[in-house]
Length: 217
Image (cartoon, rainbow, N blue to C red; front, top):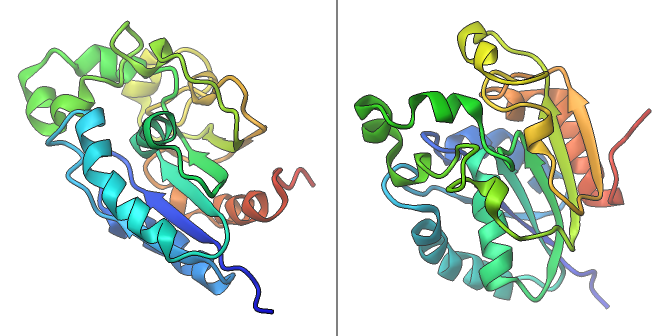
């Protein structure tokens, strides 16, 4: 009898590409996972539209697996994952790791969202990442699945950090990363834009997918 094969869907953040998740995808394959590292037009559409575009690819990938379907996301990719699970929950859903997710929105988005430049660069989805009623803090979903969240507390972006309450990674506060029902949460010395490359972040991601909790040692 052959062992089951698990898969991992990787979702990058806004204004990034699948290349930002390539190192994580490589490490996951080394551990025996199949990977689907999706490149999607993050700044062209609203979150629900992006989810509708991603869903067929994820569904086809899930059908190739004999085991569980996991997710690893960065930044806005975590919001897409929340919407995917709410609207199209995979039947073989396994564990989820979010890196720096703006689960309660970002004050940095609040500051810029009404400017022409931000609207042009970040598009409709960028308008949905604030802390107001349009943002993810108003969503009603609760994590009823195995969810580990990694927050960063380092920044080189002092201006945006000055806009954010509490410890932050330069874009998102540690508090904003949290989601009701989450299984585990850990804070690492990482900045928002580069956290997916950090060895400690990669280690904790792999550890959670295997054990269902972070390595607190």
